[in-house]
Length: 126
Length: 512
Image (tube, rainbow over all chains, first blue to last red; front, side):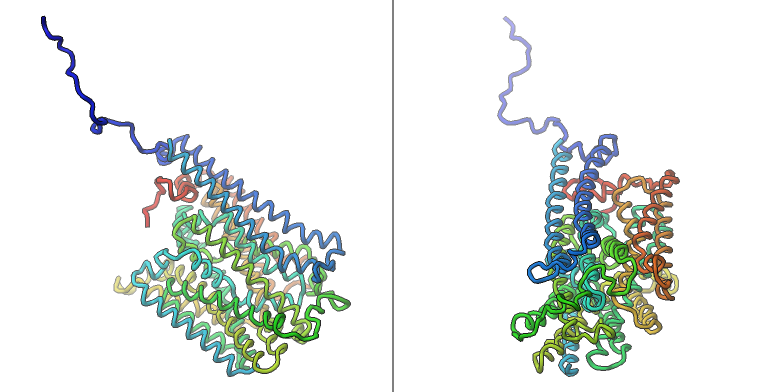
């Protein structure tokens, strides 16, 4: 009886730390660094989402701000209309507009940071 | 008005400004501290400093004066000054910070890889900055004249000397502390008299009478109270200039570099919007009260209404003290904006004109910081000379022209440069030249003698509505015609401008 010359049995006690592994570098950033087609697509989608957000804020503001002179122009009664003891133009332009602008800024920053967080997670995760 | 108390108050502001500046000097040690405060300033400090720097003579004195004379249409000035920061936030704030550029010429050079575009930008920074410094000096002269009766040159000289000393000695770090302090001083100085008049001082006088009744035509928008033709066009054009000019002002960008990253730049801007909105509640109130208590100022010296009002309304010591507080606030306005502009202009003169020449002349035997100090001196001398030769111009009008020039040159450069990857170097240069020439021509015609009325006058008086689209169109058309002149590094630039700092990518620049 001869003993078979198979591979020797090894007791596994811990992971093979010395063995080759899949690289940990996220490939998303490498695609961008090497300016591959895929990397360009990543960048374009980031820039386009941010630009859409920016244009939405500007568009909204354009409608709100731009319609005020038009309102005064088309409906002269609004020029002297009294609101809370003050003429409407003074209430709109002197007071009410500032909280609106501040609110728009808050909404913008929240969404811009969300877009960036999603992008970071996306290119970092792959 | 009692001159002694007011002079004392102005003196205190001056001493505090220099004092805080020296304190900053003690903790600014390296060249990096000197220029950009090591970029370690918290968003709240930075927001106060940005607002303090931005609220100039035109905001502190000019807006109230314009509303007093021309009525409700002029409320758009303060709205536009504020919305300008919102446009800056959504279009350029974070990318500009991520570009790593310290000045507008820096941005132009790294994005378009062209020394020629850089030189055009340097010229424009000096031009816009000088145009903006001029009304600050006028305002200072006016304030000192109102308070003491001294000729306008005195106030202008005081501001010029203090600013140069402070900028040359302290650089950016001390300027940040000074300006944060000056925002709160300005707000207090403007709010306290209104608070006392409306809340403490119960008199049976109709405080809001000027807004109602038969004599209230001035309070209506589009009423031509200022004698302007085509008020609807003028309103839209003004709004466009202010909304899109802010991002192109030289001192605004330098200040953004002190944010640690793009995200902080955005958050800082939101705080700035709150601070600006709070401040701009007050100037219109001075105009409304001025119509009742100081109607003579409508025809002469409207820009002094903020300074005159407390003394006119409140009798005795209370009026004197509040008048002194307002004078101190006005001085803070001149000092802070002038300092910011001088830092920005001096940075450009230093980097682009002076340093290489100094290097030649002295054979390398000079210290970099000295070049910046000489540049600071030069950047104040030019507007001071201009101030001595120009007559009296309305504060907010001159500032309006500076905004129109910025909106027609740097706004297209920044907006398209950040968002449009097919912009060519030739297109950038052409847009700057065409927009710059159109807006400066309008400004020159305006100063030399505006057309008599009708459309020509309206178009020259408020040029932004046509010069800004013209500049955008020029950039787009020329870029389409010269696709081979698109910078080779555009893709890398886009990565640098738009990728969040958390993502570890090659940004194409050595990290500074």
